[in-house]
Structure formats: structure tokens, C-alpha cells
Image: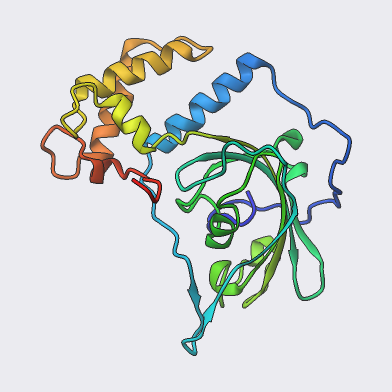
Length: 253
């Protein structure tokens, strides 16, 4: 994924791609899609995330901001993207200096849009900020300064030079509830004691495993449960608190 943290893989020289106006990108079957989403949510559940900030700062102390231009916004928009939501989008990346393209999401994963959680560091800070409050079907053009991208180091593997300002064209396809939302925490916390026990998480995982296209045996489920507590139960009290769960609350919560 472009604009991910520097340990992500970027295409060395992506072929040119154009917005797919009037064309449908290839879609996986329902079973494959359920499996893909399940594995993605499980991977996110097992990870710990950082949070992005709203402003960047240069070496001389001045602040920089992400500039957003809305190219298209649907008239009917009942849900907009917020921190912690799971998004599905295509985006193309260019160097603002000369307009050269360094990334095209349509050349990856057989042209399927990218899935990622908003506001938690799955993409660079600039994209986390730029994709807030978007409607499904909305298109944006955004300018991201170096402090919200790859900074003074750049990203040589992705052909992004030091101190590069980036431009992205974004098209958002879907906004769904993220795997670590406050709603999900409440759903797992069946006794409403604001902490998650092994029994509660085991029950939640069991229901998720039942939705998966591939049945999982009990030993696999137990291994996942143990891994969740190993990575998230920091004080080793046998429970996962909201802080340990790292709930990505929306602003009003």
C-alpha cells in the first residue's frame, strides 16, 4: 500500500494507470470477500496502533497542513468516515513538484481497492487526515506536506525523495465499522463491566470464526485467543481494559 509506513512494500516502477471511469473493478466472490474481511479484521484485532496528529511541524518550527479539494460528493450521504472506521478506497499518488506518479492502487491486488482502518497509522498521517469525513462515492484531491508524509528521509524504495510534498487522488468506495471501535468493545463486553474477559473474547471470536468460509479447529481458536491476551493484556490481570484494547473512539464519545 502506498503511503504506508516505510517497512511496507511499494512497487518499484508502477505502470501508468488512469481513473476507471465507467468501468467496474474486479470483485471477489461473496465467500472470498468474507474470508478477506475476516482475516483483515483479525489481523487488526491482534495489532496495536498509534494515533495520527492533526498538524505537522517543520524543522524551523512552522506548521504545515493537509490541503483538501472535494472533486465529487454524492448528494445522498448518510454515513461519513471517522477515526477507527474500516475504509475501502482507490488512490493514486504523485509528486507535487513535477506531477510524476509514484503509486497507483489499481495496479495492486488485481485492481481491488485497498482496505485499511482510518486514523490509526495504517497509511501515512496525511491520508489519515485527508480521508476524514468522506462519503462513500466521494472523490478528493489532496496535497500532503512532507511532515505528514515521509519527511526529510523520503522513501527511496517508493521513489519518494526527501522533503517531498505529495498529491493524491482518492476515491472512497465503502465505510464500515472498524474492528476496534467503541461499538465493537461494547458488543464483546457482554456483562457491561468495561473490561473484556477471556470468555467474552472467546465467544466473540467463535461467532466470527463461524462466519468465515473456512472452519477453524479449537486449537487454532485457542492460539488466537492466547495471542490476543499476550499482546494486549499489558498488566497481566486476565482482562483487557478499554485502554489496553486501544479503542478508537469517535470524537463525540
